[in-house]
Length: 321
Figure 1: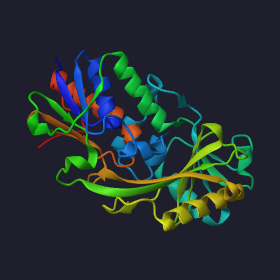
Figure 2 (figure 1 turned 180 degrees about the vertical axis):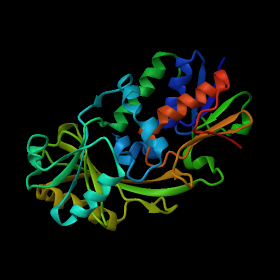
Figure 3 (figure 1 turned 135 degrees about the horizontal axis):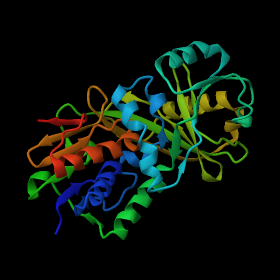
Figure 4 (figure 1 turned 120 degrees about the vertical axis):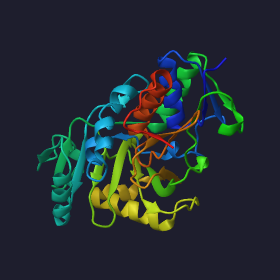
């Protein structure tokens, strides 16, 4: 017998199940696909746990809650605690200065050789030592495994909140079709370049085409991500690939010889203020609007939903509709 039904097995739904178990509740987890995969935007994420960098454009709630994300994920999956870099070519130094004014938690450096010898030509940089990164697909798989070990399996079924008795957590992203929720298209590229070695995510600032590069195992790198206000769910555009590869080439020309492994695109669900929230409607709690902060903010949303269900306490991310 379950205490709470969760709809959606992306990062938000899986984190919610994990949090409910930790509070002594029994979740039932339903997903129409039966498992995480390329149908969900969690699959295409970069996996950066970078609250201080996000502070350049995000609300303070993202920075505050995001600082606890790495500790959560360390209890679930492998997390690389090596910080992150924000760099700019000399001609774009003004972009770096602007980024520095909008963020905290960094150290300005002029010589990258100690941190990332492969970055080659001198570049001004900011080092955010307290940030981290993970492999999103490995994290999803590890969460599924951890839940299964405690008796929670993903049921493959179509279900709507109104069809279910008792408390429901709706974590279906764009499929929830909530008022005020919009799609922000993001596109990414995965490359293999074994001759390039990076230890941590690198953000390259550029007036038109800023990108981030996240290292993964085996000489693989994820390049992301475009950000377009659009509900278009088609595959990656040629323009996006050109922009991402051009920026990567500017960072290290050896990316021109990289093997193109994968491209991907999906819609990030976002509210007008781009802050994720728990929206309460009767017995249904909607965990949504994670935008580009899925792995950074899903643990906080899951925690606040669980605290509300078990103790009636309303956190700062919770809204009653």
